[in-house]
Amino acid sequence: MKPQRTILTIITCLCICLLPAVKSNAQPQAIPFFGDTVWIQTDSTIQVPFGKELTETVIENFYQQLLASKYQPVLKALLQYKEKNKPDDWLYYQLIRKTAQQLSPKAANYYRYTLYKWFLLTQSGYDAFITISQQKMLFYVRCNEYVYNIPTRYTNAGNYVCLNYHDYGSVDFESEKFSQVKNLVPTAKDAFSYKVTQLPNFLPSDYKETELQFNYRQNDYHFKVKLNQQIKQLFANYPVVDYNYYFNIPLSKETYTSLIPALKNDLKKKSKKNGVAFLMRFTRYAFLFEQDSARFGKEKRMSPEETLSYDYSDCEDRAALFFYLVKEIYNLPMIVLVYPRHVTIAVQFDKPIGKIITYNGKKYTVCEPTPQQQDLKIGQLLPTLNNTPYEVVYVYDPAVK
Image (tube, rainbow, N blue to C red; front, side):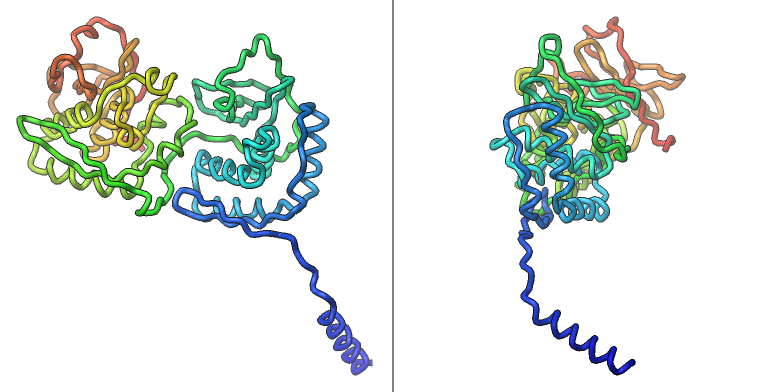
């Protein structure tokens, strides 16, 4: 019996080998992604049509068809990138956006594009849902953080923030009523975080050298800083979050290595007080001033690298950059002070100087990083703010990890 089985096995293998190869219609597609390339395999079955009708039934049918498609290779590529690179949620969502754009261009069918984003995000484990009105589709994800300039919905499961509100500009929620599409992915439980702890590994060729200059004590200082305009794209729709979030967004590698060592070299012979004064004037005079409302039409809190990348910035942006530089070079305790129409920083020195802010029993010295009509020194507060109430919105203590 054994020889017969062997012969049968050989014949079976020969038959299989002689069968015509089954052609796969999977197509490799490259997604350029902030210095990297993510390859996805797309099958024709993933191209599910979606018309102009916007109802819960239509959305559910679209979801079921997509779920029955060969979407797994696409999701696998995204999750492999996530596992390998450990991106923060904001960066991973940008990859999902680019993938959705590749599968279903935004300009061709906005509803379909949004549903692909929602599908890939929920299949990645994030708790998200869709709401619809007669003509609009809003895409929400659960978030346990404070986010200030986008719509929020509260449910028994928690707080959800809108990821695509910027596409509409504004929505009149009083006149336009939205209904929530039932939860189609109950296994998706993860909350989304806006915390950014690392930037992508951009290519060195993505950077251009920009000269920043200012004057300090009758000396001109020039810094050739490498800047990447993709930073603006990465944070274009980043919402207003708590100060400690965007103050602590790091610089990318190329920008960091082109600026921080040069600053440290100029500061190595200066005392901490004079060094902080130097950084204070750098953030004041290396950039022009303009309010966010004039430039963006809304409030936009910029990260330190965004502030370096734009020609214009306001007090919040300069405060973020100054905070980052003092933290990186001196790692001194600091507090962020918010007045009704102004944001500034106070630094804790061994011996306080001038205007002192006492908070939790500790004394901090005001250091104004935004240009004013008069050249304020360390320890000098704007005279108009002397009797103005303020709020301490963030405390940085290097000793507290």
